[in-house]
Image (cartoon, rainbow, N blue to C red; front, side, top):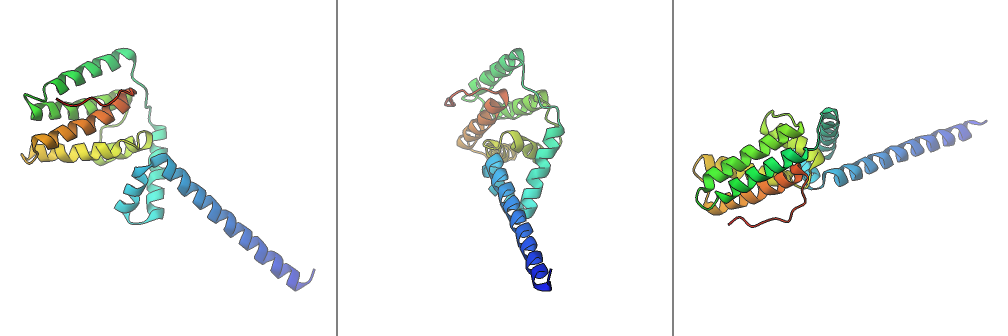
Length: 183
């Protein structure tokens, strides 16, 4: 073989390898976007870098894969559902108490399912792996809950937080119930 053939062959191999790498990265990005939905954009925005965000999301998935997340048994589901109905029923007369109960119930369901109860950001990250469509609700409800604790949440804010918590709660319970209005 002459030198020109070797050089052309080497360049061709490099181009093919680079093309395969680009295709693999694009496929990985698409897979992460599909798996995490709106959480993908949230993480890219929060970290300011697509590659760092994708590494973070992949690490989350790997972490949650190692956890022993389990579905609730029917008795647990009934019990939690009943507790939710009671908390929601208290909203009209005691919205602050109802919201605090909703936050507590979400944590209890997460614990029962096997999610670790470390800090809020870690809980949200863990939830985003299996429930990416409602993790935004969790963050929004938490923000309102924190404002409530400081005395800076209106009744309408608290109603909206209850709606957000309910979406996550139903998802964690495994129920696909239609959203009920908070009276």
